[in-house]
Image 1: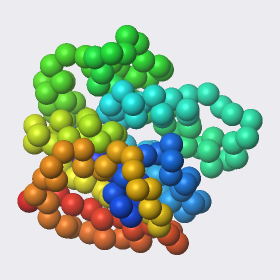
Image 2 (image 1 turned 180 degrees about the vertical axis):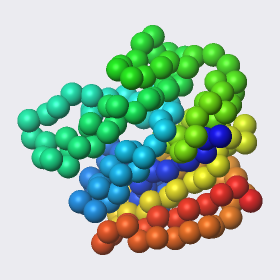
Image 3 (image 1 turned 120 degrees about the vertical axis):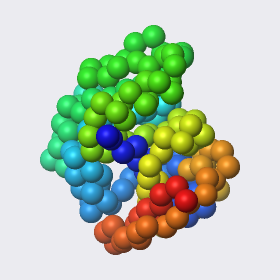
Length: 177
């Protein structure tokens, strides 16, 4: 059975506005590349998926690290939960109806980790009791606004690990209590 993991970089004040955040440093970027490489797939909400579509096409300004991330991201299966999108890109499946059944089917049909990407989607899956682990990557800046990591009330959690990642990030790993 797969494990659903909600993990995102966030500011010290708890926001995940990736259009406003500073890009990750090289060590954190490699960490995310390796995580994505090992995933069984990713489940995206519409907004996060649209941001991640950036990786669908090569860009001339990319270095080797960005090309590597794009390659591992492109080849992994993606499921996009949206009622407003009519189509999704390569290696992606649109999930429009009966989200709970679809997500339970993914968990039952796969092994390993499946990333849950997007605070609103994570809130919905938390309410359904489907998130198995939360990974909060704190980075040394304050946004003061944006989308909070927890889009709804914080569920009861138990800390299971804390790890420095590179020079400027700390990952806190929680499981439901």
